[in-house]
Image (cartoon, rainbow, N blue to C red; front, side):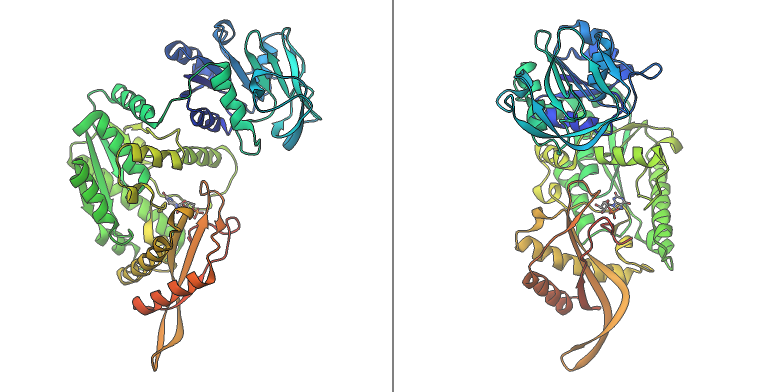
Length: 512
Ligand code: XMP
């Protein structure tokens, strides 16, 4: 195991991800709990993350002394490098001339981090984000790479296996970064690199058991991959101490609600309460056309219904959620600064306080593709695991204007035709999300000898890695024509189809 000590960088989780990609297990501990986690975990190596502080400020966060005394390899990244230099007798200069963004470093000397990768004299692209920099090395260290703004862009004390880099190897903008981290994890720390999702599963199961004990857990299923994977994992850990509640708002895609019920009851035999609440949701949405009003109503109705069901089954001590790492970063940046709310995301965020429950969130460190890998590991069917993301408020936010049951039915059919064609063309997995939107606009058409006056349907398809930014998927025009023809022919109520050519930003992925 490698222990990652977090000093508050936005991208600490990426360090963990890179270490896991190198086949080595890692855990993150906040700097102020690092001493205790260090003692429990007995790691074979330590990575110090970046962070927003300055080591020359007042009372800067520092790694525990044990980190330097344990005789273990240590890699300091950015702030972590500065903390390392400061703690071991070097000095750090509070910066007026930082480097932000892409930079080039020149390799000065060999070192174990660069094994098989970088040679002295070569120049390589890295990603920098620092104001402060190390300006005198502790004894035993030598500079192994320099940049224009940082003479000590990489430093090493090979006898103690201490390494520091000013740049960020964990981000993709440092093209060789993942391999530098792999070199640290495998060559320097001597770890074998055979860790896998199977081990993650076993570790999390042990953690869930330790956290929950004899307690009762309730989990809200959304129909999506994340909550399903969380639920199956937790069920494996604690069996029927878990109850799943599926609040079915009637705004799912075609056949999806049935799939969730048969997967949980039939395939896994996990206790499931299925609440058919389409009347409540459609009733409450009647006449509501403001997107935020829709989202707020759905979020609140969901929480009320969920809470009611939880009371019926006698309450629970824990609430399980399929929170992923991108949810964690997004929510931090949403509360941490003066950023505006673009959309009120629907989740059960208000529930734990309201119901006085602790959270069980076994997927918090994972990215979407890792959750999918874990789902496969747990035996979830491929159609479920590989499914495109679907928003909590469902079809309601894909029907601009007022939502009716009739419109939902029309949209479900158009969406199913579109996805069917995408699957048949073998494009489903190349697309992050594809869906149809039913516009509140009617246009005139002609079919046979008759005039039609029906709704417009917009098609959307994007590629993305995390949903934060997205590009339009460039379908061949013949493909789009075929889909448009099928929709207009097969779906009554739609007589015109358009394709949405907007990336995110400036558009968002969903229309509301
Ligand atoms: P936007 O539309 O904000 O969507 O670009 C980004 C990603 O988030 C999904 N999305 C949601 N997911 N609850 C969710 O669980 C929501 O309220 C919600 N709104 C949007 C959207 O489908 C896309 O993948």
